[in-house]
Length: 184
Image (tube, rainbow, N blue to C red; front, side):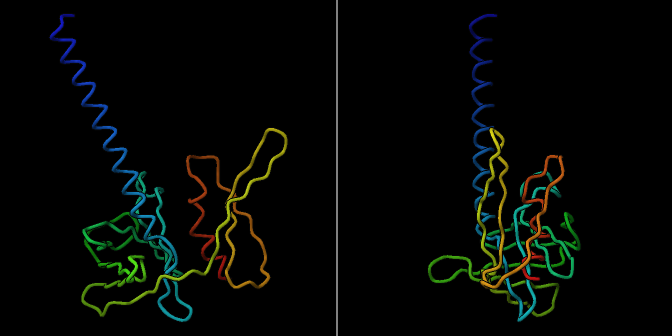
């Protein structure tokens, strides 16, 4: 191999590594931006919407909305806190709804407006109805880790253990179920 070929090969490799690193950094930043929007939003006295990052539908982290009727929608970013959603999970088109996140004076997510078609937009406030605590149990050199999710109400409540399957999913795979169970 001559010096020119070696130099070109090294440059191609360097650009490839740099492009991959930028893509990785963009994915991490994008996931961080999405996580800021996650949580529980309340439409009314007993009506909730749960947003979380989930990669079960597309293989990459995306913002997904679950409501208590069982509807699941993937939210696709547009710009400046604006997203669109299609008619069902992992389906963007035809666009059915627009979602606009709103911030308070401190810059924190305070609410969202969900408008389906030409109908009047619905306002949902970002609320804290559950607490999360990372837990682990050790037995010898084996450690099992999990997330304890419980209501903020302070009342006694039953416990349910959700165990993921042996596939590639992580504990976030089961979060939609836990959100519903925490309120029961």
